Length: 160
Image 1 (cartoon, rainbow, N blue to C red):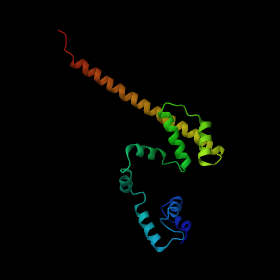
Image 2 (image 1 turned 90 degrees about the vertical axis):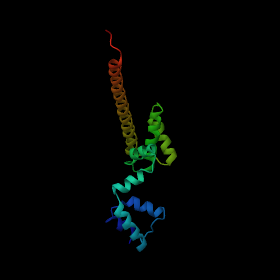
Image 3 (image 1 turned 90 degrees about the horizontal axis):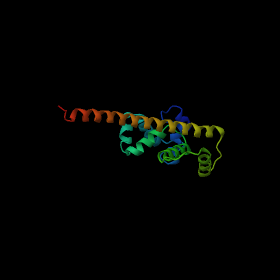
Image 4 (image 1 turned 45 degrees about the vertical axis):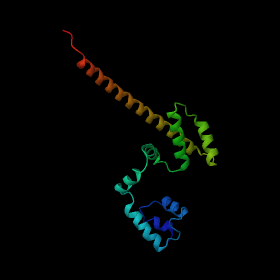
């Protein structure tokens, strides 16, 4: 059976099946052994306990990066997201034209207008997420400060 034919009835996406062929996990056309192995993969595909066990092996930092970029389909998009996040965390500005040039040079392709829009949208989403994180930290600090000021008022000796 051909891999494209198998993908039509499988839970496993075609791009993952093609990746398995490139990594020589399965062959194309699929042998009986490959079909047995893929049956096992399908049984555990999207199983929450299985996913939890896998992601728990990652450090917290890698887990955050993984979940932040898991919706991005291509390697260059994940790379762009990581580069922009690192620039923002370092307090630097993201120069989109330089970023596009760097990605085109690194991955040896010319970006289409749609891909360029993707970069702009990605930057906007990263900046919004960073702003939400800052607001959350500021709110947390405000609550802490109020708590300690209340504690100091109740703990200080009362004047008679």
